[in-house]
Amino acid sequence: MPFVRISLKGNRSEKERLSIGDCVHRALVKAIGIPEGDRFQVITKHNTDLVYDPDYLNIHRTDGIIMIQITLASGRTVELKKALFKTVADFLAAEQGFRKEDVFINLLETPRENWSFGNGVAQHADGPPPHLARFENQK
Image (cartoon, rainbow, N blue to C red; front, side, top):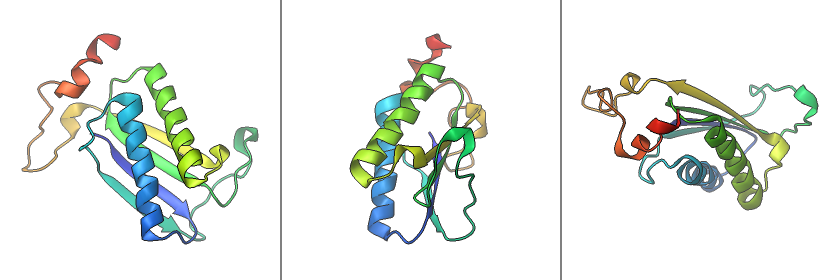
């Protein structure tokens, strides 16, 4: 049940932006096991209003930067989060030509009861959905 915001610098076509979204979504499916049909993304392109430090933590970033913010339900292990970061960077580098140094990812975790997928109902407030139940014992 992630909600993903992808921010890009420059003029990428709609097809390129959707392909980037595909990479991020497939990484979520592969690394942390979200269902394939669970895709909610906002992809925006920016010119001068995407601000970043070009050398924070001695990682050299360029205007090819992509900033990805993923809001998802709490409960994944540190190992799963690391696997997600690596998988996203690997997919974007291999399939879209991004430098891994330019892939910035931020995870925001929130309780399941904070989500409504429609109809004004908190669908997962009373327990995890089936695809997350397997992670309950890993906490």
